[in-house]
Length: 236
Image (cartoon, rainbow, N blue to C red; front, side, top):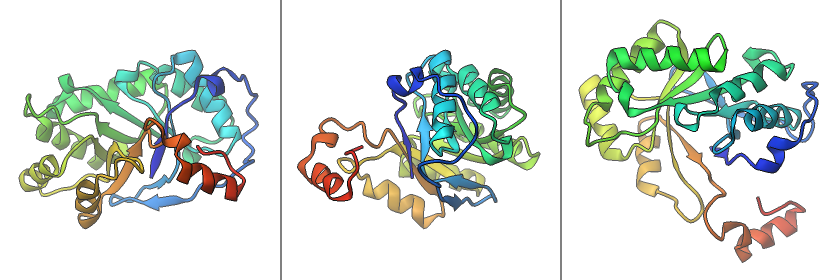
């Protein structure tokens, strides 16, 4: 399940949002803790706040319902603005954000959640991720315990990890007895990461890809361009 790289050209199109579904209806996948996540989402790195707000509005017009941001992207305010302005009810949209290593503690995860909620200007976050395991720091399990508390009290609908390898996931499970809903990793036809995908699948974790079409040369790969031509679509 991918989240795409946000494009500057889309971001600068000031498309008025009516909330109409035009080009596609995106299916969802159920998550372990009860939420459902759209299988395609709009990634917003490296857009600034204004670009992100415009990109979200334009993407909603084109059928997107899932938007991915992060504390580290410094555009949560813009993503939240786009969500508030787009005219689609909040409960029909799925918003993901991620927090940094300085919040890798039980209390830190709650502080990170609170800060993201305030920057987004939304009443809740659908999916909150630990952005990186940062094994040199060694406290990502405590961050996950914090996520479990946020899930338990309804502050988030789903919890997850980003860039976690099977060894990181094994430690999470062994020390908490719980698994995340999602593990977001860099994944593309050039980097299939079979071991991580299979490990996630075995535990019921949804694998989500970041920047799945960013791999150098992918959009010019003759196999991809031939399939695109046969389908009457762009390579992307």
